[in-house]
Amino acid sequence: MGVIGHNVNVMDAAGVILASGQDDRIGTVHEGALLAAQQDRVVEIAHSDALALRGVQPGINLPLRCHGRLVGVVGITGDPGQVRVLGDLIRVTAELMVDQAQVAESRQWRYREREEFVGHAAAGRLAPRELAEWAAGLGIDLEVPRRATVVAPASRTQEHTEALRGFQRDVLQVRGVLVGRVEPQELVVFSPAGRSPGPNEDVSALLHASEGRLRHATGRAFAGPSTFEHAYLTASDTLAVTGLVGTVGGYDFDDVPLLALVRGMGEGWRGDLLAEPWQRLVAADRSGELVATFSAYIQHHASATAAAGALHVHRNTVRYRLARIGEITGLRMDHLPDVLILYLGPVLGSEG
Image (cartoon, rainbow, N blue to C red; front, side, top):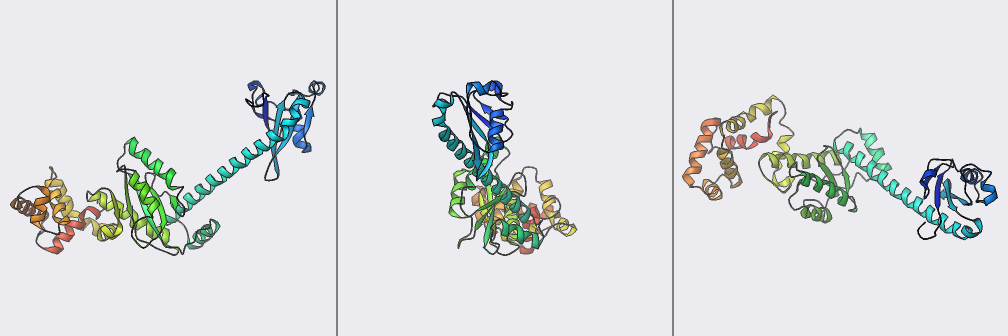
């Protein structure tokens, strides 16, 4: 309107004015537009005609089509002799806008359907036949090896939550990835598996750009009908156990394979039984120094000397704390099977 100097109306196929430079006309029926839609032709309205029609002013009304289907009418208010030359220009412009809007909506719908598929497939909620048919309809090849990367905010702050939304917006533009949710506060991204562990380079770059505001872990590569479920579980368990043992940043399944696998096997009374020593240690260690000492001991391959260096304490202090851990848990810190039981403690049991 600012360019042509005339009022423009947009009507639906029933002649109802949806948008207009004259606000009081919105929601009313334009009989000239209704006639243009019903007869699928250009309707010009002179001053004398306007007096005989309801909700009409002089002008020209042109049918709007989207992919060959009539979807509405665009009208230009003014003397037909003056605005006739603008008719096709306005119509073509409006049809381009409608086409672009439909393409954008179709793209969003496809994103949403893919997201829904990914969420259901990763959670294992689809029967084999349903999985195969849905994947085929979306053009997803189940035989392509994929890795899952589970991404979550590093904390519950608004800044970190916004970082996850921004990452989701950007990762949808990466070619070849599939994105969905299984948990509300987590995003799972499936990338075609390369030769090296981790997500593809574009996804890795986006994660690096988050500057510590996101936690993420990548699972093993899988192919076939169980691709999404197994890839997701290895990534999800990796993220969970790295959080439990106090590590931060981005991790791969191969960094903590034992913990990640055991997490999915530890439910029930057997897991509870194995987790008891760890739970006793946590309950008794109000300052947290014993848990920190054990973590350092594990991270430095059961070397008291190396753990002391990492903790900036004397080696005898570490030995004293390990002895204290043994008293609390009933386990020997110089006996590998006992150390392994305590190592698995955070990921075992109903409270792990």
